[in-house]
Length: 188
Image (cartoon, rainbow, N blue to C red; front, top):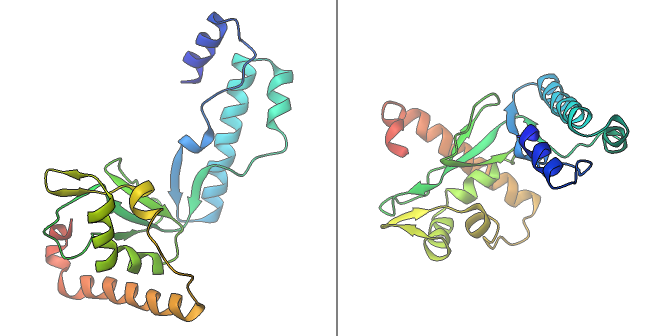
């Protein structure tokens, strides 16, 4: 991508122009902090090498230091919500995946989100909100992080509220494990 971008900039007479492709376009989840830091560093080094190759060393150095911390390689778990879900369900499907899981483009992910977020997403209130503000595909909900999650009205939560919601999310996970393990695929 950077090679094509550099060629376009060269043809426009803007060979020294910085990249419009941010590192935040590259996402991932790692289970160990060391692996997450290696992945972050690899992205930063790759960006620097592309700048040296397609621009000049002096311009690359200007933007290289200090190291930036604004990329999307995270260490920990992620909550996953499918983009499309049937309106016939009583709740919106949401799952918890471990670090190292590759999350496909048919899903939204909340990286390193507190577990209590899962309880909010799985709530009937959130289901009603999604049905009201999000687009539909046929009669199915088409989940949107910008319309559905980012606009979901949540009052200021106390620590006790968060503890209670976390317990609810844990109960959801336990219930799935105990009752629905053989039929888990039907949740999605």
